Each structure stands twice: as structure tokens, then as C-alpha cells.
Image 1 (cartoon, helix red, strand yellow):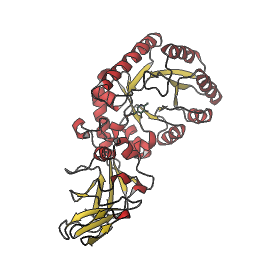
Image 2 (cartoon, helix red, strand yellow; image 1 turned 120 degrees about the vertical axis):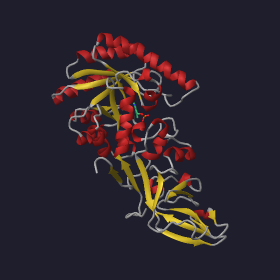
Image 3 (cartoon, helix red, strand yellow; image 1 turned 90 degrees about the vertical axis):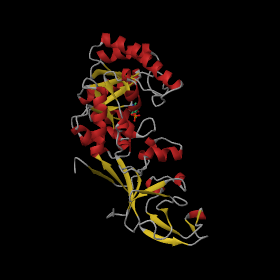
Image 4 (cartoon, helix red, strand yellow; image 1 turned 135 degrees about the vertical axis):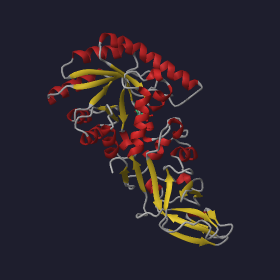
Amino acid sequence: MTTTDLRARARIDLGALRQNFGVIRDAVGPDVEVCAVVKADAYGHGLWACMSELVEAGVDRVAVATADEAVAAREVSADTPIVVLGALTERELEVAISVGAEISVWDEGFLTSVAAGSVREGTTTRVHLKFDSGMGRLGAQDPERVASLAETAASSEGIHLEAVWTHFATADELDGPGADFLRAQLDRFLELGEGLKATYPGLLLHAANSAALLREPDSRLDMVRPGVALYGLDPFGKNPADRGLEPVMKLVSGVASIRVIEPGGTVGYGRRWEARAETEIATVPIGYGDGYRRGLSDRSDVSIGGRRFPVAGTVSMDNIAVELGPPGSSGVSIGDEVILFGGDDAERILAEELAGTLDTINYEITCGISPRVPREAHGNRE
Ligand SMILES: *Cc1c(COP(=O)(O)O)cnc(C)c1O
């Protein structure tokens, strides 16, 4: 396939996003709310297009990490409930309240600020009390403290006690001690949550991220908070197709130049790649400035015309070189589309594969695609 633009672009398949949402909706059934996590610009996929699609598909709520993200999400949809999961300063809290976001709380002083800010704004803010059942980052560690916060919240003007929630540390570990720890966290949370629910009927309990909701039905409770799986990335780092998930992002660029390198000739910074025989090299305008990481130098493949070719030498800021083999053998021409990862052909390269090479997780691959790369959404909304 020939491309009209050579520079790197991220194609965002909204049909795949909708399919992945359907997989999660079907898994949890109609009685469990789906709160789509769209923080970090929808894991690098582009908030506007992704959230619009999810709203149209019937998502119940969305979750973000920061006040600015809440503002951006409110611009996408005037009436979708938005939950802020992260910690906020007083100033950020004001911003979040002003767009009607629901707020995570684990501290008495902060709860007072939410109440005061809401009264000033003439509004009622829904709060989600966070219990630290074992992640050890944010949330109240003592269940008694959560119960006391609930009591205060339930009687405060400007506040509606909406939910109590927690977050798992090891949901992606399918076996070993991680599996037991997930169960222990869930049990601690249920002990607290079920008690509170008896006192406050209508209180929502939520805990499960993608990994937990897929592997542990008991963790789904009243609402699930999937992020990564919605984007067609496997939370366990395996092939997303095994769970019916389709990658939403396809990172592409084009062949800008083709040259023959004679034996002994080298390519790229540091002369890291050297031709053993006469070899054709394609230059492709994408590099670590686009988020195609330098750690992939000499270690990854790209896909051109449904075939894999190895990256030759150093990934630079703006370009990579690709080894096409003996001159004339590849059938590749200038202008051909180069797929760095994603897509649906048989030889596709998954974000999970690049993550494995880089000793990281698929989340970091899509979140790391830089703002220089335009996101081009297509699919149902085209
Ligand atoms: C990011 C996040 C999620 C989503 O997790 P995934 O693993 O991407 O499904 C859920 N809950 C909280 C608190 C988060 O920070």
C-alpha cells in the first residue's frame, strides 16, 4: 500500500475500540457499570475521538487522573459522569468541581474542602472514598477511617457519598503470590464495603481494572474501571486476540528513501549496522522523537506489504533504517506504508512484542507515542 504522507501517524481504529468495549460489556453483564479509563489522552490514543466513541457506545462513566483531564473530558461530553482518580491540590480541586467531576477522597481535610468548594459553586459533588487495601500509594489505610469519612460525607452539605473503591497491585499476575494478594485485597475491601453498603444503600463499590475484571468475576462488584483492554492491549502482556481484543492504535510511517549499501558499508549513528553483503536499506521517517524508542535499535521488526523486515542499526530522533535484503528482492518501493505496530495482518507486530523487547509493558508503548505524531481516527465515525 502506498501512503500519501510519509511521516509517522497513529491510526486509531474506533471500530476496534467499540468492539473491545463490547467484549467488556458482555463479560460484566448489564447490571455492572463500565467506567472507561481515559487518562493520559486515552493511553495515547487521543481523548476526543476515543471518548466520543465510548459515549456513543453507551459507556456509563469515564475516569481520568487529573483536573486538566477532567476539563478536557467535559469538553467532549456535557453530561457523562467523570471520576477523578488521582490526588488534587486545592486549586485543582476547584477546577474539577467547576466541571462537575466526581472526586476521590481519603482525607478529612480534603473532604471539607470538597464540601466548601461545592457549596461555593452552588453544586453537589459526588465523592468516591478510596481505601488502600494493599497498593500502598493513595487512599486511607484504616477501614475505620473510611467508615468515619463515609459518615461525614453522608451528612455534609455539598457532598453526595457515591462510592467506596480500591485498586489492585497484582491483578496482572496470573499465578504465584500475586494471585493470592489480589484475593486478599479483594477480601479486605469486601469486608469494609459490604458493611458500608448496609448503612448506605445505593453506595457503589468498585475495584477492578482490566486485568481484574477479565480474570476474577468476584472483583466486578457494582462498577469496573477498564483502561488498557479498551485500547486492545492485553493486560497480561499476551496476544490480545486470545481475549477477543483488537489493537486500536496502528503506528505507521512510509518509505522515504531506498539505497544499496556495499559490503563493509555502514548505516546510522555509531555505524552500528554493517553490510555483510550488498543490501538494500529503506529509510523511514520515525524515531525516538515520535516515541519509537531508541532501545529498539537493531532489535525490532517493521511490517511492509505484509512482510517483516528488521530495523538496521540505531533508532535516531527522526528516522530509522530498515534492512530489505539483496537489491531488488523485497518488492518494496518509495512511498510504501510501513507499520511499526498494530493492524490486523497475519504478520502484525503487537505493542506487546515491542514491550517485551524493551522490558516494559504495552501501556508504556502507546502512552509514549509523542505529540508530534498525529492521531488519525477512523472507523464507525468516519
Ligand atoms: C489506570 C487505572 C485503571 C485502569 O487500569 P487498566 O489496567 O488500564 O485497566 C483503573 N483504576 C485506576 C485507579 C487506575 O489508575
